[in-house]
Image (cartoon, rainbow, N blue to C red; front, side, top):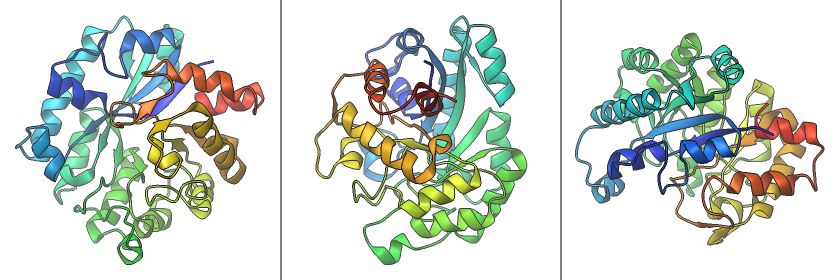
Length: 308
């Protein structure tokens, strides 16, 4: 069994703490990924804002931070080409697999760095970014984040956000709706002509957090041809939970497969971006989850969820 994980925040941790990707004490490192037979890892460049940025000691603008972290990413991928290669397309993933290499897909979490400039999408694309999470937890030039306030949660994309969606379609950059308001989500449904994803989100029917997806949202992702990656954060899995267990993740996988279908559910760990305890710490947790899935799914379904 192979693994494709749709979201981790490891690059920011490497930048802040001067860690290396090959081996470290974070949740994600290349040697542990290789041991777990990873096929592909989506590496997000997460751009903190507000208090989160202050606590991290960051005082530069989001685009400058993106450039700094992208240089760390480039250095680490080049230094470890014996294990992993960048993937700029699906064909690259297949070619890397045939050469016995893992694939790295570069993403950005929070479209704030566009700053209302559509040309920056081209710059991101040229630097290898193939997925953009439209918002994080704050309003930006694209739209609004999820909210417990229903009126705020139903706010849609801004005019620049609609332009962004259309241009991402043209470039072949994946639209990611995790963190987005529900109103913004349905604007993506309306304006995107390509499949889109929720890279790290869970099912609202099982846990009522505003970050989670309703049944209709799950169906809409499936109808677009996209995928929802189940997040490992305890508070998105069970109300007020402090620790994540494999069975909690599997309950969401089971439910999301029931609603969206087995072709439209994947894994979006959010490793190195979540602060809860895990049943098994680090990337080895993936094997625990896969083994426990065998109780509930046939092998062909597990393959689809894990990587296909």
